[in-house]
Length: 308
Ligand code: HSE
View 1 (cartoon, rainbow, N blue to C red):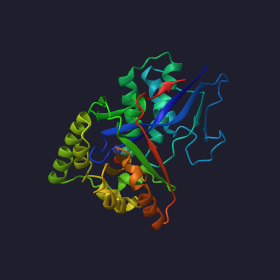
View 2: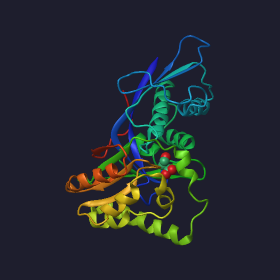
View 3: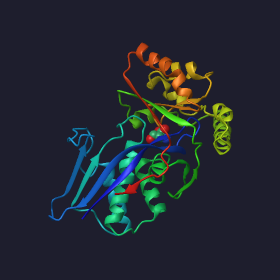
View 4: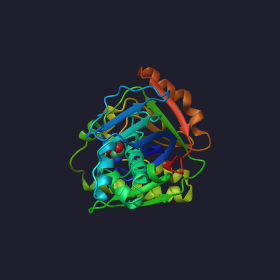
């Protein structure tokens, strides 16, 4: 028996919401989990690109694979062990770009395995296992439930989340460069602790941002999308981020420019075709820096993961 699941990409943090805010994007990975009939066949993990060619990525193909780890935790939850299993991942979400590719495969593997096992785990269990494997809940939550989510990984390992309606007119433009950035590296440049002043700055920006979203208030959103606890430390790793932040800060209908997740993709939030008005200037920034960059504009994805 095999089950396939489709899971959206995500963009986490959105400026001030480090490790707690995230939203889903309409780009998908498809994850298929199959219990193999041949006993002793072990683990088989295949990663395919969009043309369904085998992708020779440096993704672990054994017990160290994150999808396998997540599935193993789910099996443990029901008192079983994974023995012979085939996992196939068809990737459309760019890898190691800050668009939630790892969250999508973790969620996809869990959801598919949960189907195979006859639904022993509810949403809370799936989120808790997914966050334990990913390390934070801000990508896995919208990957599972779609939309814009505030999520909190509690001390007991459970996840509390709230899904909030995103203003329809607020567009999400992803500037996806042609280089990768490992999240572990992007996290390694962060300090162990931050000052009370910087923590207070982020708390008020985050709170303001949620109110801006509720009220569909672009001006308030623009005042909210800044951060002092991760972007200042990461900006040297994200080519073009400082230049773009400067370029876009006073542009009409550009609500903000933030690092997407741990980067290197940059997310621009705009309203009223705001991005179209600055697109040429944005392209010029990347041309001047001699960086190849793909630009994609999306509406939010509200459905989340689905079993096919
Ligand atoms: N919140 C995470 C980070 C997202 O910024 O490191 C990346 O997975």
